[in-house]
Every structure is written in structure tokens, then in C-alpha cells.
Length: 215
Image (tube, rainbow, N blue to C red):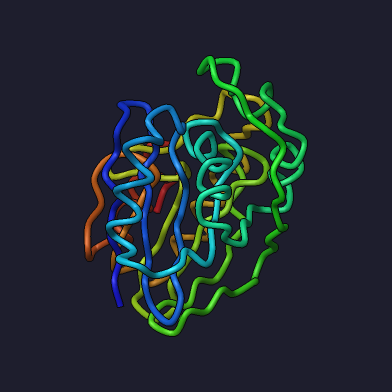
């Protein structure tokens, strides 16, 4: 089993994680502004293997802007939470914040993910958890094999996702953090900033405290 971070080429890029098992999964793609550097790096990491699955944790451009190039280069099946998948299929540069980043977004073929869906590659078994708050369609991915949690922009080490953007909701964010706090989390892999291989629950609880929720 393996979880590797793809080297970021742009300050605004999201974290990008490559998971390897019987198949391979890429979580998020960054802005795509430096795809000429990211794509070769990803090819080196794959070392001749196919990229089988792409999962986008939410609609925002710093996570999905590079998806079109990744899909074109590697032909993975691409997924996103059902409430954020449609603007990606439409190439919506408004609600994805593409306009804010000065980027373009071509319509792409995205498959809906729902609460409880599982993507199993043997060494990793990712269970989809709908975690709205940062966006209405944000998802987190809990690896039932390793206990690792991929939170997108729901929670970070020392922080939480913004809830003042289109489709955001602080009440939804609180509910999502409460849901995640019930998990036994080892590795904590957020959409930005550092990640840790163990002790992830602490950062979810910290996020609730930052929102004034007593735990």
C-alpha cells in the first residue's frame, strides 16, 4: 500500500495524493496552471502503471482546474460528490471559482459519488462521506484499511475550510466535522498544508472548537 503526495508546482494548488494498490487513485489535481510539471511528475510516480481513478473532493478550481489535463493524459474514471459533480460536467467557472483564479474549465465527464459509496483497490478501501460546509457537495474519503482520512477543504492541521463562499454553510460544516469526529482516524490528509501519518482525530476536534462547539 502507498500514499504519496504529488509535488505541487503552484502556490495555489491543492494537495494531490496518489494511492496505489491493485489499482491507482489520484485525489484532486490542483489548478492545472503548472500541468507541464505536474503531469511528468505523476508519470514518474506511476512508473508505467495506469491511473485508474480520479476523485475530486469538491468543485473549487484549486482542486479541479487540472482535472481536464489529467483526464486527457491518463483516461481515469473521474468522480466527485453528487452535489458538486454537475458544475464540473458543465464547465462552470463561476461556482467553481475559476473566474477568481483567472482560469478556464472545460466540461468534463464526472461520475456522481454518494454517501457510503466505496472505491476499493485492495490496499486502500475509500468510503465516501458527504461533508458539506465548504461547498454543498464536498466529500471526505475514509480509508477503511489504513484509517487514513482525506478531508479536502473541510479541515486542516490547525484550521478549517472557509464557509463564506458560494454554497458554503457554517452549520453544514459543523455537522460534517461532528460526523468525522466519530471516526477513528490515523493518517490525516487535508486539501492544503501538511499531513500527518497518525493522530488525525485531534485536528477534527480542534476544528469544532474553532467553531465554538464544545467537545
